[in-house]
Image (spheres, rainbow, N blue to C red):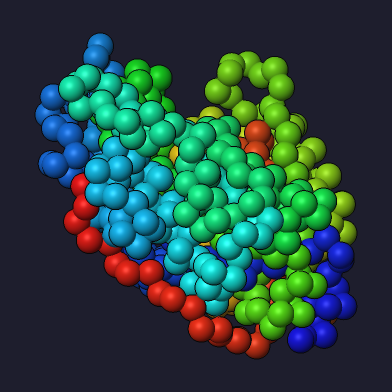
Length: 454
């Protein structure tokens, strides 16, 4: 047990004791993510040919009726492989399960293994499950051919079942629900998980998010709204920002009250000090954010957690690379934190420049990066940020772009350092503290690698 964690954290502190991720570019774990970030890899590519035929819907670089102007995205290596037998699922049922459900099951098994928690240890307990998910393409595609509809179609396609699958597979009796708040889904799910632990309804929570790009129709819709990047890059906070790039993947964390984690001798990967959520309210447009609402949320959560702006050494931003959203987000971060610091500019980055925008699962990717930044005491380079956005006054807002790798700034106090991971204003702002705690691994079964059940 470390004195620094015990002395500076409140009774509301929540420990991250396990984590898993599956991300574009062949990233299957946290070590793979850190290597990709440090090497400055760009995981964006074209849609796999066996996913959908881009030539049928993508045309030119300008919006055309019924067409997208891009098919770029961050894609997983394999979304069909699944070890159904490991989860007690028949091949016939697995074939009708949304790949996002399958991915969440695998991520949950891997996160529990990372936490050294054998599934049988939490079977029958009040462990909670919250997942962020929003895409319903798999069910819609099945319904296009009524001959393929089976007794498993409805449950296999329902987003509401995504969390229940985990509770059923691992025999978990706590709250179990899917959250759909678009881009902030997985972080709103995290906010709900934190509140469940604070309320004492559950002592352990699984929280994650998943997104799979199965249909070309969403590309067409986002293109018609001119939201996607024509260059095929998420150039967050950059003069080159022209929209976001879609991506798929997911992440999962295992959460416990910090006191419980320390008592059990768990390896603590990070500590969530506070979380909150709000909405933009009425703005100039339904999809346009509010800098004022984001700033108020940041100020409130930091005040409740008792964290001074100078204690924040890194800010993992939403940073989608949109010309309108980025300046407003930077304004909110700067006014809430940057201008109130005396220890220098607050480093800001976005994992989307490497992976693309995982949409409902994007918050999990950002959280994974923030945990790695704290673990390795370094900030990896953010891509496509050579020329700062001209509408963002970085100096005046007290912000600094992390265009190159740099060591993590030292906290001006003797308290452990803090990183922040917000989503859009409709979502929460969880904050993680860096722990320095001994490792202790317990025996647990290791999930088998997926094999080809379609």
